[in-house]
Image (cartoon, rainbow, N blue to C red; front, side, top):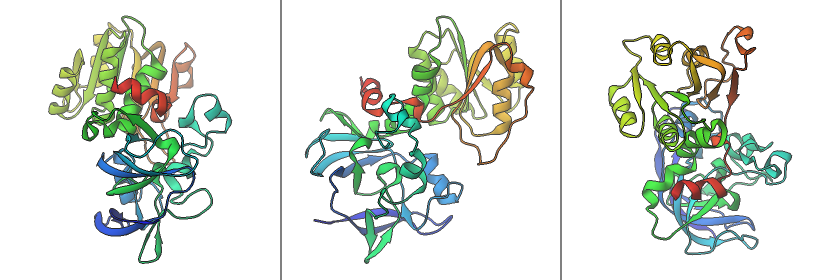
Length: 328
């Protein structure tokens, strides 16, 4: 049976979100109908609205959902009606990267999550007045009262879990925390600098505080964000509005450079700084998303003493394993 609900529709580029009645398809064998309790609003959603991400419009986005299962498809095994769930990205489950435990690098990640707007067979999950709307964003499109979600996008949590607080774990928190805990894994006493203290950057700061890192440095332009970063575990903060962040980072590390840097702004200028301050054997993690086609010039010889630049999607996380660990 189809489900009537309310969804936030983007009708065209730069148009406001419009809350309107829509109709969800009945769940396919691998799909779950979820009554949404909360959904985070991520910069990625806004990038669809602005046209930076070429998701087809009109459509429904949202990819940090949390809610309660109302119905499940015939082949669903992870959850049942009444379960409380968080929604994250989806993946195919059978490509080489998925089978190796890296679903964030699924070979079908872009069409399944960001660009398609439809199921893999080309069908739509949402319609309005008998006309299809593009949805299936990250396998969910959760900016709605109800969402039809891929089973692989869902993670079950305890029924007493505060869903309105946990919703951002599905993307933003997972991305920042996973970069630190799953990929960088700082050694005892090492230094780590985060450029960009939004939600993702703050998640990286909190994760770094749980790690063995000895010096955790937050770099941003907004004083209130820097104050919050210090509350959440940063040992040092740099206000890049009025200071030279590169010079200060080198001073803080006695000229040796930073062991780990995280670029979370999407600015190529900032990425250049995050590379420039790396210590020998240091790693720069790129998790901000600049415009497609952006380039950053640097001297390749700078990498010859073990420095690395690594791009990270969704914290290189397997949501079914990583999100419960974050909740705990």
